[in-house]
Image 1 (cartoon, rainbow, N blue to C red):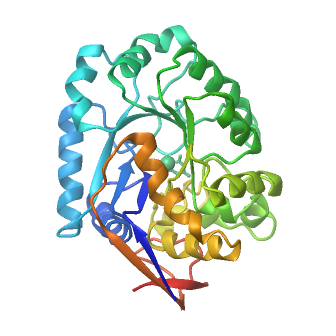
Image 2 (image 1 turned 90 degrees about the vertical axis):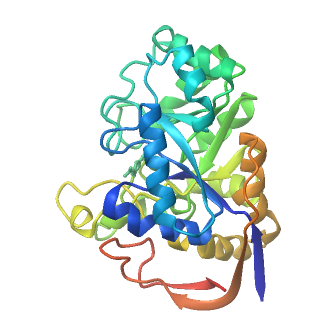
Image 3 (image 1 turned 135 degrees about the vertical axis):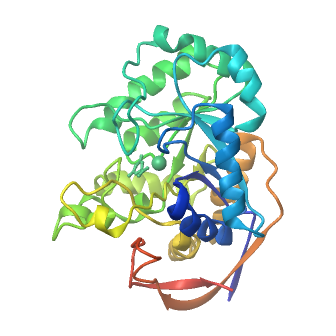
Length: 332
Ligand code: DOR
Ligand code: ZN
């Protein structure tokens, strides 16, 4: 049995820099036609020169594989209309992190007072630049995303022509907010479709499943499955594949992030097949993103075959999601 996917897209990806990038970028380009590349590098991507240089670094690492890196900028509330107009053609969107919410997010937004964000968000809205948001407050870890939903709604109401993408949603509250505002969209990761907090910390602590936002309750995962398996038109796949070296994960002060890029497609095929929803996979993993972002990805057909294999224990020094576990689909 074979499964063909046209131009799969990963609309939320961390490619890092230097040696790490050289390891992980080719693993994404093997599976995907393109990806939205997150700007939380060191230092974060905040200038046109950095966008151009980072894109070049990615292009060189993926070598001859055809792969489009859709670039993002790290949100700052002092980007002017003129600056954004000038950088518009080099980026697909701008990613907003609350200050300190996750890996390398220092210098992100410290206050969600609408007035302090207005100049930049109005310019983005006028220039048609979508806004990606890591939506978590500084509250109790299990409540951070649900507490952020009113902020999503205030922003969606204040800037009705701004496309706002709620990144890596993990809760039923976010799922419900989607249909209340025409300009709210969402990405869902692979790991949040598979795991709950029980898998992370219900038995022995599993550092390779620790990420932000933290995995939530079974009913939250059900809400995400409902959106993804039915390919809700405002929802796209975004892996949030976030590699960290093994010694930064298996450590006190474990870094947040789950590395899924190389095995995302086989595991999604397995999940959609299990739920008898394989016919919706193409939309979740490409067509919805094409419409939401109004992009034209390169033609790239990926073929999976139904043949079980064992996920590697490591890619260099990075431990992938479900390492050493069997998966039922593989790349042809
Ligand atoms: O777990 C996470 N890791 N969540 C994020 O939002 C960022 C990411 C990273 O860059 O490591
Ligand atoms: Zn991320």
